[in-house]
Length: 231
Image (cartoon, rainbow, N blue to C red; front, side, top):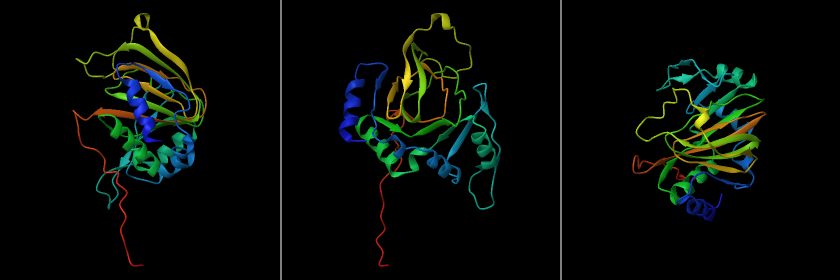
């Protein structure tokens, strides 16, 4: 991910709506692979969401180890969910490796936003969330497999919270873009635009939500600290 590429994305978003860039990221599996998902299972500083076959969130048990300052999610439940082929989400993934940290740094340098990386994936054909909108703009980067997408011109008004708790009237909804994301492709989804992924095979993708700094100017400290020692 090069800085000039981030600037190119920033300039193309000025005055625009939804956009897509083919082969935006070289070697996307260096940013996210199934081996990285395994690594995430060994950590307790990430937050998982499990998606059932009906596209709804599944409850995930938590427990508090004696030496942990915060509760931990049950890893065995997560593991069984993944191996059964159902969909999952990992939030806080940007902290996992240097490449994802640098990716967020460049986006934050180029745009007035705070970012993170969320992982969406499944080992087999398994539904993701139903058509919905999000509070903030989002970049989607496909890393493994291919995923069909729909993005609508319809948006949720900023006068209401994006609760996604009411049925949609598809008779008045108009598709803005429909296509398939392949590894390395990037999709930009505007703030509050309705959208849905329609996965039909194994896949892993990075979702990068962008919170305007006018709302929260606090960034993750992603500096690469090095401690000098004599041995």
